[in-house]
Length: 285
Image 1: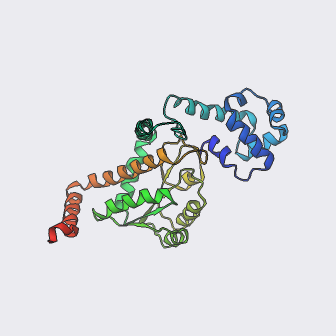
Image 2: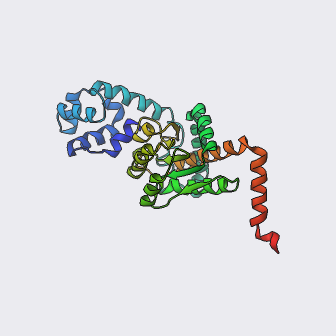
Image 3: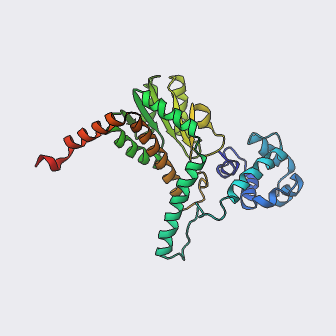
């Protein structure tokens, strides 16, 4: 997870640390030129509190923190001319402009996903899924809706994909998993508690895992054999909706599906074709 997302989440931050984090998020470029003393003055805190915050974020000190902050800022600025993934429109935007803006955002998210995805990790993920007896998917809310479409497509080519919709059911699913299963865990932040809890159980069960998550170090990536990164321009909370990341997740699932399909092209096509014939009610009249 990027440093900006960690600051936004503020996990285990004190009230003073939250004040510092909020100031950094609002004045990122300025902070790069501030000493701990100056930043403490502006946030009505102390240099010691700033250093503790940096250490809580796993940096040795404030200077190491600023180096990573600068790198994150460069990533954001490199997309400055693109659509704002968090607020692609405002209350004055007309319908026609909204339509074109959202279409551009979708295109940008697709391009960004293809740009950042590691092709070798993707290739190995497809191989891992292909040899698995069962594929289990873990996540919450929106990602599970994307996963349902993947499940439906996989069913049509004879691949067994499980999605437990309830959190407790996902933990049972993980507990019953084996090394012959393969798990796909989806979390934009990589810190979703329910997903991490499932990952811990899956690790104990020796089930290979593929993570779909945003760029940067996070808990989920540490558990997974392979990681496929999403368009990571969205903030965690400060946004209109998960527009870009939703398209990014959907794209990755579709790439995984077509990758598996292509490995057994003729067999996959025949299975899908015969299944469609059997279930199409129009052919029964």
